[in-house]
Length: 152
Image 1 (cartoon, rainbow, N blue to C red):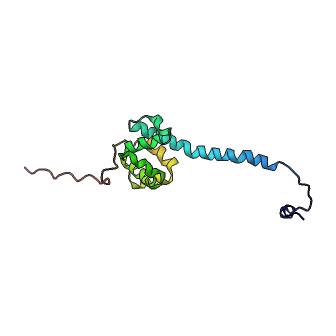
Image 2 (cartoon, helix red, strand yellow):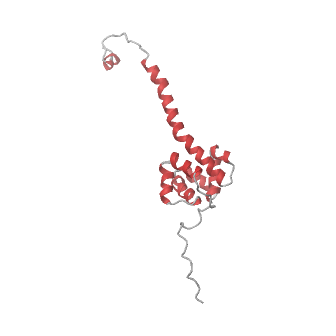
Image 3 (cartoon, one colour):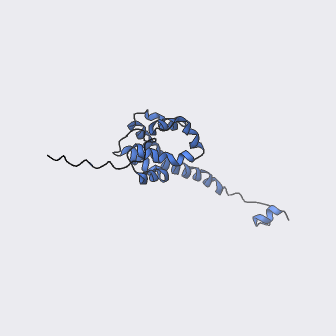
């Protein structure tokens, strides 16, 4: 007996072709594209607004590689940091610098890291203001208390 016939569980050399795989061949790529659009489009829309808020050309947010160079300018990192994004080291630091540059805290940066399709649109379309490149500044600390009133 042929091994292929044995593995298929059929003793007959005649195989029925019902074309049931054709439907899945069309359905699965459609589901994939829908899920991709569900996650990518909101992230890109949020990045578009972030670039706009920072005074950079918004179209740069959709150009691969160039958008990372512009993000380096926005957050105040040197241009050679783009190399770190390709080895994933910079990718973990980037959301923290972006959050800091827009006046947000570490919790928000974790949201940018793990749920970018939710937090980038919130940052872009929300009331966050661009505060300038913050990558070289120390961690955001609360402002010092005001001096006591002068005695007369």
